[in-house]
Image (cartoon, rainbow, N blue to C red; front, top):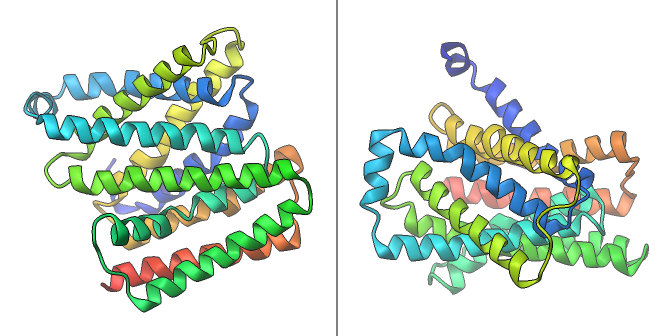
Length: 293
């Protein structure tokens, strides 16, 4: 562990690969998007439970959590559930490149939510970055519209997923003020999994019968995306600046697209590449504005 503390860039690389594999793993699942999400959250909560309850400080913190925090985490979990289902579903219609880059607009939607819902203020340069990101999204939509309505449907689902994860992030900013990352994520993941399970029951979507490969995909999503992805980035915050860690996540679209090119033969069009570059430029520009503030 001391080696990794001295060389945290190895962990950054691990985190980037971990989150970039998410879209690839989803593509291999034979289960409906809702059930794939159920499997992911089941394994995530199952792996986190001993970590939380075998640690005295986490156990004590969990016992002192207020009703307000639980309610906010429950709502946050619902938004996260909607994010997972819509993003997984988008991958059934559009390319990995389009889906991942559109989901990366999360920070822009967080900015808009902060402005309109939390009564924050946006600088003129921030508005410019939002306009640039919108222009990039429009280019991808134009490219996919010309290739068929199903691709455009996938783009819209990815956009909805970005808005839902932005809502999850905004609520997290409120709750994280007096709650540790581990306890917060555990409660949110629990309610997220519960919401997905309830949705499966309401829609009468069978929970089993999709083969062992779908279960394995759910387990890999929990390990790669949660433990070796987002959790690794959280660990890196102790050794690297938040701005650098946040920016490194923007490597996901190109890395995921590279995997998709190799495994599925998904070659992005020139318009898709141009739109992706413009979106990432807008998000990076906004990230720098946040850091400067």
